[in-house]
Amino acid sequence: MPERNPVLVTNTTPLIALVAATGSLDILQFLYRRVVVPLEVAQEVRVGGQQSFGVDVFNRADWLDIQSTPVPLQPFLKNSLDVGEASVIQTAMNLELPLVCIDETAGRRVARLCGLTLTGSIGVLLKAQRLGYSIAIPHALQRMREHGIWLSDKAVQFALTQA
Image (cartoon, rainbow, N blue to C red):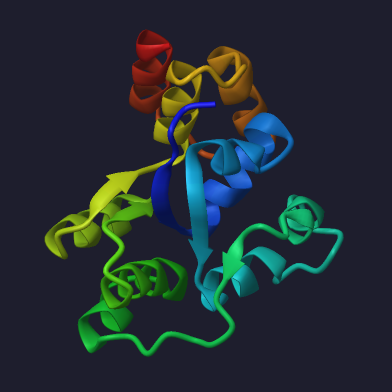
């Protein structure tokens, strides 16, 4: 197994997208020593109840570091982003954790402005493959789309080229 990066703070969409792509969240455990999930993100994942896609996988991943209390948000984050993205950025800044996993454009832009390093669900897939995790990127992208994960043609083409 490769040396894992220390810590990742993740948003809702990458969690759901990775479950769609791989059927589990094991890829995150393969890559990272610790995966921090703000309480607000956990609530977003679970909002539809146990029958919602990915909730069972999320709940079984007992190695996730799900925060137990809401994070107080700076006004500019609260007014610029949805609560999940804002909580990921605020948690990363509060805990001085430089790496966040966000897929949405606005959240990625604000995270960069806050000095954070970014990855997303496709970046996670590509990095894992590069480090020896057994995954077929074209199949993973197809599964993501079949489960309603929106991927731009540009992002798909990038992923296929890198794979």
